[in-house]
Amino acid sequence: MESPAGLIITGCTVLTHDDQEEAVFLEDAAVVVRDGVVAEVTDAASIAGRTADEWIDARGQVALPGLINCHTHAPMAALRGLAEDLPTEAWFNDVVWPVESNLSERDVTLGALLACAEMIRAGVTCFADHYFAMDAVAEVVTACGMRALLGEAYFSSQGPQGREKSLEFALRHRGAAGGRITTALAPHAPYTVDDADLAATAELARAHGLPVHLHAAENRDQTEASLARHGVTPVEVLHRTGVLDTDVLIAHGTGIVESDLPLLAHARGRTAVATAPRGYLKFAWPTTTPVRALRDIGVPVGLATDGAASNNSLDVWESMALTSLIQKSTEGDPRWLTSRQALHHATLQSARAVGLEGSIGRIAPGHRADLVLVDLTGPHTQPVHDLAATLVHSARSADVRTTVVDGRVLMRDRRLLVIDVAEVVRELDERLPALVDRGHGRRIQEYDT
Image 1: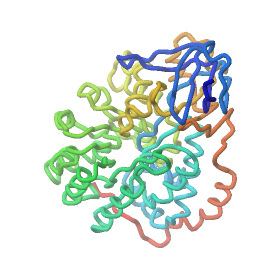
Image 2: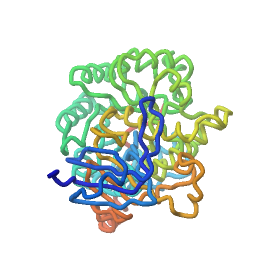
Image 3: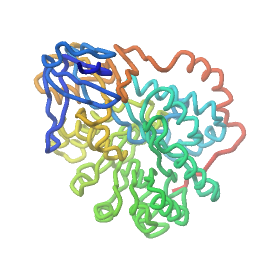
């Protein structure tokens, strides 16, 4: 007799992909999970008589690949709402970088716990994090069951030890948490990390088989400042320092200009961009990530939120809808970016962006069982004429009922099983006065692009 499956989900509609990566919705389907991997995607009737350690009746729900937050700063959930209605320079120099000089490892832990709880409840199963004291974040990821690409951020102002610490972290934690943790080298940005450090980082990435995750061409002002001061764009800096010869994840890229596109198209490594549109609207940046131009040259664009200090939210569902809407407006074409294209960015392209294509991003045999169940029975999602459009433009993160990573249920029927949010908030509230103090006059860095 066949041994029991680890998990069987039945009665749902499942988002799968065909050979051309087109979204296909299988109705009245079942997903069978063994040892954290999707073993079968089949019709519900075919699993009659099967046994499983855990069984979920998901009638009225849609099973989607877990969402991926391709660029965030999870511990900054502790700074949510602290720096509001400010231009970028004041946001960094007057609030965020002074406050970050106070951060203790415990603050980072609590912020990461709060962020992971928020993301699990919003259907995010994997996130790419770029921050400080990342040993604490790795511990949170290990304990709460999420998947993550983690990088210890550094500035050139830290001296060689900043780069060395980033490498040491990446090597020590690569493959941790049963393989749920992957790692990257994490220079902050071309305007805070000099060419020598970027070139050294590129060499280390190639030598150790590590990707690079950094901010670059975040906005048009940065690009114009780089051209005025150095005669090259931030993307050209990545090219001449060899960073584009590595696998690189570029955060934001709203300052990418036409002359950058050939460099990105012919980069020797796997190049991807993460877009976090809500923050660009808050900062009143005049441009957004050029998704269409990047897609035309084969550069995947994954969805992201950035940190909650700038975005106020870690809601990738919102990022998916905003990306579609803003791209339509920017391109002046309602036929672009369609709901199915938005789902493609949320699933396959986001998996590629974080270097996990073939492992996550699909509900398919052989892929890790990272998936979410979305309830579409509410009045705001009915009737359903176009399921893709309903998911992107009508459904909300609060419609996620269940979140599964590696076959482990982290949230079931909206009940979070892995983090005590009330206790996290209680302790964080006690620490906030010391954390947000700016009377000392310190800051960890200067924003001057």
